[in-house]
Image (tube, rainbow, N blue to C red; front, side):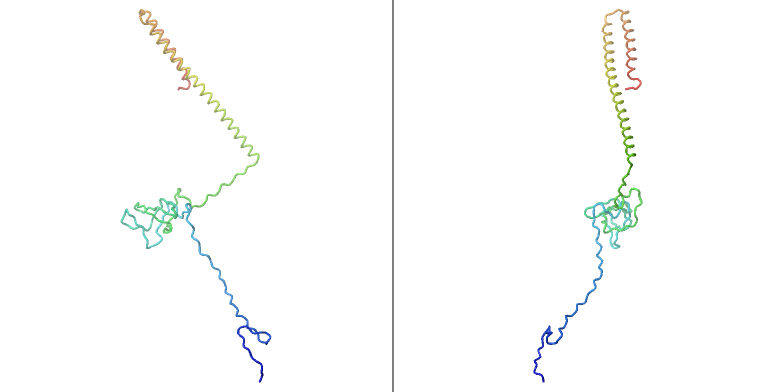
Length: 228
């Protein structure tokens, strides 16, 4: 019988007594599967409406109907968009077959038929930017020369029009001056004819008729060839 003492140790065992230290249990590697992120719902903004004016919609829940305070009736299908607005959410004013207008939020709507009207607003897609036109140096100078020629032509037309207007103003002033002179002359003849003999009155009458005829011819000349 051996007199050696046996010592049992918990956990770790010393290597100097020839006992192998038990290894820690291996942790099983878990396979991490690819997790697809949940699709994020597009946030409503004032310009990304899903439906256009003229589109035909219906309520997407078969058990839900729209009610109108103007008619004791429920509406579900064949709802035409006549107006839309944004108040934090997209909201549509839709018209039923009988002309009743109803309010339909976008989250409750489903497209039945897209409008093909020419005035239907676009599907909120940005317009393509116009492509810049590139020109050669010769084309640029030719375009500048053409524009300068048009500018000179317009300046000449403006100057001629200004001269014409100035001449017309002068003619109008002269016309008025001669008109006043004719009236003064006739008035003077009438005053001088008072107390005259029959022969003198006949002379003044004949003279006034000639004067008036000559004055009419003179005044008419101001109206030719362009009347006032």
